Image (cartoon, rainbow, N blue to C red):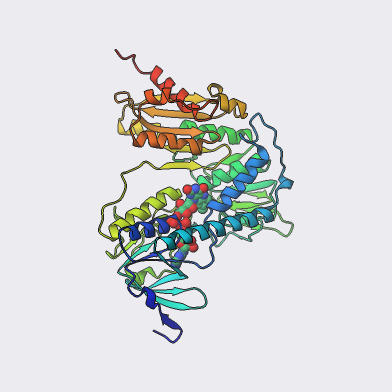
Length: 468
Ligand SMILES: Cc1cc2nc3c(=O)[nH]c(=O)nc-3n(C[C@H](O)[C@H](O)[C@H](O)COP(=O)(O)OP(=O)(O)OC[C@H]3O[C@@H](n4cnc5c(N)ncnc54)[C@H](O)[C@@H]3O)c2cc1C
């Protein structure tokens, strides 16, 4: 130990050290303590939150301004670009992040988990240096679970200024809502922000280097979103590779493209990929290897190349939903303590927080066709769901896939208001093998968005040969 380093005596015997206090780290710590281990959770003293809270705040403010269904529905936007106060949204996001962090800390402490403030770095596989900017401490652990997440890629040639050229984690630092906006990357976050900003009247150009837009959701649902974006004048430029972005002295931003003229606008959101947040960890000192994308390489039980060290969440997966990260955290903790995972393989529901939103659980049509899985398809459109019409949403769609032999649900894909909430019916129905016959007669309240499940299940049943 050096003179500036004090032994962290209370944690000298820490059995499991979890690095990172996001969904993966919290779930890992809770599972490990539940298995009887002494657990320390190391996380930064100042919590900034991931993109979830700022994205959620922005979405909620935009949805309030444009009403359910968004611009392009029957409704008339009640807000305008000028009404949006980014400084207020920033304050609100900060408050929510701090509140959420305080409540997470309380939960962790009440379960007997020791919280260690600071950033961790490996000295050896079992010894970590924790620095909070003022004090440096040493923490020893028998097992380590790395859950430090992923951060947006920030290419050196992009002139991020935190005001008009921003990455997805500093979106709320935008000075004002740009009337002309370029978004680089049509992944989940790029699509979300294209929809949000276009809903409030910004002219959005969405640049994607792949030849087409892809998503976890079924093609027909994704196409419904893309048609909606087109109706909001979002210009999607596929097969277009953005290499850099700069702002000139007059506030115009230029997104430079490979082999094409630059795109001029008044703001750029660079949403092209995430990278594992491992730069400060000194993984080499721990003998932990990364894959070709810089993510920590793990086996099916989240064990790294060092048998005493595990990794979970964004640091392994890049971008995924928080529930998937939490699940991997729990699984990593089980493996670290030589226990079986604590849950069956619940299907994960994926979501795009667009306006209106996309939600999806289970395979897509092309997955089913590729695997040779027989299926029957049922559809509900807004025209057959009273709540969708009442709320002024003409474009929503719910698509169900069921097994023709067992009549149980295989998958659901939805585009429409509240679909992120109602997808949980499908998630539960798939997990508990509920039949489309049960869904078709389930006593949903009327009029509700949930009734789309009723309609789609009936549609699927009508396509099956009559039984008896
Ligand atoms: C813009 C955006 C919007 C998103 N919106 C959603 C959404 O609406 N819903 C959803 O489900 N998912 C969303 N996601 C994805 C979600 O954020 C991730 O799936 C999830 O946060 C990953 O969890 P994690 O615990 O692996 O990492 P994180 O949540 O990133 O947590 C990692 C933590 O580790 C800390 N850390 C880093 N280095 C160290 C170190 N050396 N020592 C100690 N601690 C360290 C970090 O500060 C961070 O607090 C969004 C992502 C982005 C970028």
